[in-house]
Amino acid sequence: MTTILVDQDLCTRCGICSVVCPTSIVDPADENTLPRVQDTRAGMCIQCGHCEVSCPSQALLLNVRPDEKVSLPAGAGAISSDNIAFYLKKRRSVRHFTKDPVPKEKIEQVLDIARYAASGGNGQPVQWIVVHDTERVKKIAGLTIGWMKTLQNTNHPMSGYIPGLIGAWEAGHDVVCRGAPHLLFASIPEDNPVASVDAIIALTHFDVAAPAFGIGTCWAGFVAMAATSYEPLQKELGLPAGRKSAYAMMFGYPQYNVYGIPRRKSIEVAWR
Image 1 (cartoon, one colour):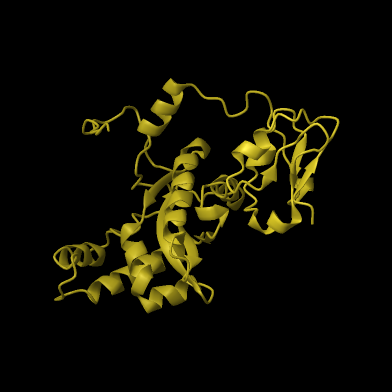
Image 2 (spheres, rainbow, N blue to C red):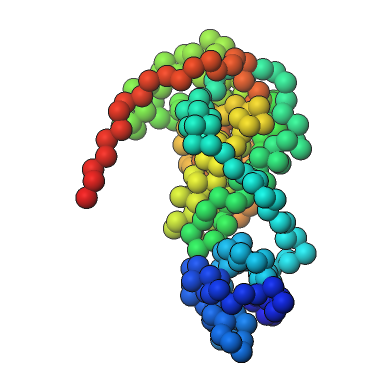
């Protein structure tokens, strides 16, 4: 299959597509030829799309589901430095949620953004498990407490905190999922050594995009730790063979609004 499709009437032979290709497989145009990828190097294409989206004249099309191409409207996505600063600085870890469920359609909109997260070699190894049913979220919280009980009287770093957490749970306080209506798990191949980083990047995209949809998030550390080793929880998640949970996030509509920006430590930068 031809790797790139080039419109000879639009191509200006500027050479940008060749320069930006991460694997350097696009031969630049000259007076007699258009940009091209030789068949012997086609297998090196990671389908990242840099060549296509960097073409000023929109003459080039990466030949991967070309019918799905979406043009970028003029000015789309532009945001001022002040607004992006306020947007990110006001982001909070939400631990109080309303009982209103987030519609599946809205969750899919945020996940559609997260699928554009960077990944090693554009491998896109992350798949998603959304626990949408509130009762199943509560069950997973209970299973996480079950995992904690296995850590009692061990040398696990969390063992000192376990009695208090279990006590709070048994007193009726959800210290695991904080009453969140939904959970999100990023699953990755067990044999991919860099996929865990890809998963955190993808989850961060979800975390950052969610507030624009009115959704609050919180990284579910207890659940994530339990999912790496506690078989009853792994069975509950129903992970496909050969895949594992990389991390988890709780989310829902926040019960409270944000009216300010809290303090943080000063940045520490070493310039070399």
